[in-house]
Amino acid sequence: MSEGNQIDDSKNDDVAEDESSPVQRDEPEEKIRKRDHIDILSHPNVMRLLNKQGDQIVLFADKVLKFTGSGKMKYRYLMITDFAVYLIDPETDSLRRRIALAAVEKICVSELTDNFLVVIIPTEYDLLIASARKNEIITAFVEAYEPEVVSSNRFEYNAASNMVKEIEFEEIEGTWRILFSSNFFKVGQCAWKGN
Image 1 (cartoon, one colour):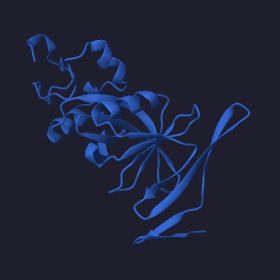
Image 2 (cartoon, rainbow, N blue to C red):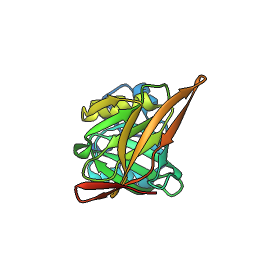
Image 3 (cartoon, one colour):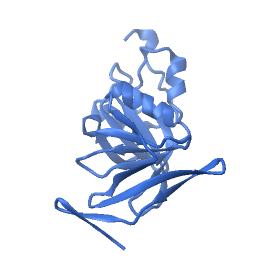
Image 4 (tube, helix red, strand yellow):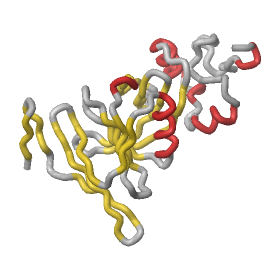
């Protein structure tokens, strides 16, 4: 990395400026700015975390809406790097979840023009998020790891480690809505429908 491409991180004196900085500088700066919608350089705790984990390239960073297994919605920073997917609490800049890219099996999206996508992780519970930048997120995943991208208006996902939900997307009079089915609880290899 040339001297001219080093990160100007004067706002974050406690974060080392070195060649292992997680913001990719091989690409034109306008492309980096286009993908980094939260200005990660202004978040020293996030920079420390990425440096500690060994991530070299940030492919995407933005605030998204994450859905919990119980259906609650929480804002999170979603970052996709060359090694992992991160969910960061935007109020505290603390790590809430790290998912290795190798654990991602596929991305499920509806066939409608909504903002929802599900990241399927067979070894853990899945990740349901909403973002106006859904296509950018998919592009970052494909560049990082090339997971399968599946389009369907109905699919199942693991809302929690032992809970499967069915999600259905409908378009009604020019708008869309998302429907969640009853819970299905996994018991070993079997599943039973909850109330």
